[in-house]
Length: 275
Image (tube, rainbow, N blue to C red):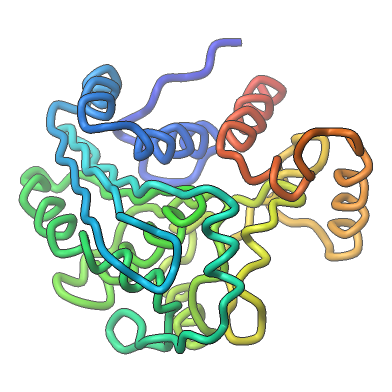
C-alpha cells in the first residue's frame, strides 16, 4: 500500500498527517541544503534555517530548527538529540525551572534556553511567510519535541497570540509544570498530539512531580499498533512485553524505542494495516 502524500490542505488530526509530521521532525537533523532539497520535493517553495550555538550547564551545544512554507501550510521543525545527552541533563534536578510562556507556570531551564536562542527568528519567519493565511504546524523529536511544544505555546500565549493548527511531538520529555500543562491543554484541545513508543525512556524524564506532560497521548504498543487511549494496567503489561521481546538486542528497549525511525516505521505500519 502506498503511503498518501503530504496533504498541504489538512486541518486536523489523522494518522497519515502524523506520519508526515514525524518525517518533518526528522528533517531537522539534516543540514541546510538537505532540508531545503527535501522541503522542495514535498511541495514547499520557501525554507528558512536557524542554528544557534550557546553554552548551558548541560551537554547540548546548539539549537537547530527550520521553517518551510507553501501557499497552504507552514511547518516548523526542531532538531532532537541523542538519548545519552538528553538523559544526562534531564536527570539533573539542581537547576531551577523558569517562568513559562506568557508567565503561565514553569518550564525546564534547558528547554527555555535552547528555544530562546532561535525563537524570535522562528516567530518572525512564520509571521512573514504566512501571507496567505496558511495553516501552522510544529513538530519535533526528543529535545526537538519539547521545543516544538513550547514554540507553539509561546506563539499563542505571547504575541502575536496565533494558535497553531497542530503540534506533533515524538518521544517528548516532560517539559513543564501542571499550571502550564493545564493552560496548554485547554488552548490546544485537538491540536496537540504527543506520541510515545512503548518503553521510550525520554517521556519519563525529568522526574515527577516537578514536571508533567501535556495532552494528548498517542501510544504505540510493543507490536507497533497505535492507540488513542490505553488503560494504565494494560499499558504496564504492554511495556513488560516490550522489554521481553528482544532481551539480547544491542540496545535496551528503552533506548531503542526512542529512535525516531522506529516511530515513523510504526506509523507507516498502522497506515498500511488500516488501508
